[in-house]
Amino acid sequence: MLTPKEALALKEKLDSSQRPLFIYHDDPDGLASFLLCYRYLERGKGFPLKAHPRIYRDPWARKVTENDPDHVFILDIAMVEQDFIDAVNAPITWVDHHTVQEKERVTYYNPQKRGVNVPTPELIWQAIGTEKPNDLWIATVGAIGDWHYPHYAPSFSEQMPDILPLDAKTVQQALYESPLGTLVKLFSFCLKGPTKEVYTNVKILTRIEHPSEILLQTTPAGKHLWKTYEYFNKHYEALKEKALAHKSADKLFIWTYEEDKLSLTKDLANELLYTFKDKIIILGRRKDGEYRCSLRAPAGVLLSKALEKALIGVEGYGGGHEQACGCAVKESDWERFLENLRRELKL
Image (cartoon, rainbow, N blue to C red):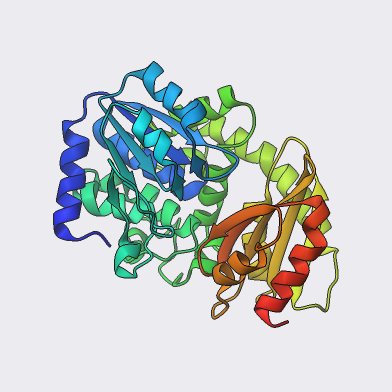
């Protein structure tokens, strides 16, 4: 969590910004972080960072200049290059929970400095949640979407037990045994597809008053988002069927597929871990001569440290949390990478 002083300072930075620009990760917790901020301020612009969570000077410094913000907020993004920070004239506030980064000329909030890993939506909620209590559903979707059961989940269950039942006590139950899991998938799906459609979906989400609008399609806005969900969920279920048909007695569940336009690895890797609870999941999408992967592991496996070492001597990059990581590895180094990973995991 943020310290009380940090939470107050973050709120003050948001309050004082008249033209904020938000750059956020393109996943449920990144989107939730943006939605909480935007719905609180009711002003600003937001841009999802796609592909991988690193902000470079080009094109992002140019995008900042074009939009002329008085404050830049970076939400749930693991890496930011110093040359981007140096090229931006506006003050920058960076809220994150990945591996701690040391940068200059940026206000940086990350509870990992104190050895605590709390997703970004929970940090945002700590700063501004009392001002927008009806947005508790967004904070809950975002945290659980990052495989974290937030301290306020029981309060949300009491508020909306039809979406998160009172007997749901774990992330797995919330994601795969309750309607809240559908909202997590919808947040993820809203960030997929053509850029214009992504911005339309996000704009609609900034105006949803109650999640039942989506789940029960009670408003035109909710119906629009539900159509997006149904379209991508059809592809997701087809991909899941193929993955589940892959049988393996190996401790590593390795499955790759080819897809040029649609990435569903993060979403599917989570569900495969739920299905194969004792396995380490490596789900890779082959594109442009490399495998773009989502890795998941059961509790007790320090996946992030193993991945860091497995990438030594391999053309690729990656990182993440203890049990959830992402990486990209050149196709020519794929087998070497898998051998390295087995070695580091002692399999």
